[in-house]
Length: 122
Ligand code: FES
Image (cartoon, rainbow, N blue to C red):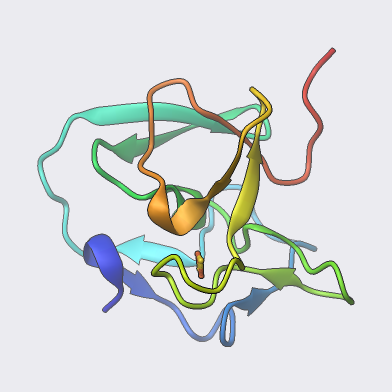
């Protein structure tokens, strides 16, 4: 079991690697194992509204809905974090407000707009 009560499905990614190609928008790399009672938080991923729970890490929120955080800059494939504890720098994501944050050490905020594949509108 991974952090924040989620289960990492190794059949869909190995050691943080996953493919951005062909992924279903609603099928994520993780599945929530514990439905803890925390207020819902709505954020967007590439403009698509998704729901998380208050206190979720951003990496959890994204990977519940996507199979990767970003494309791999040195070759084909994609990344879904590696250490999950703020040490490896593998989970940087862009936000529409211009910030770049480590998804494994950033908690979700209402209205947060994460850019995985898309560019900010306008
Ligand atoms: S996954 Fe290693 S710093 Fe976030």
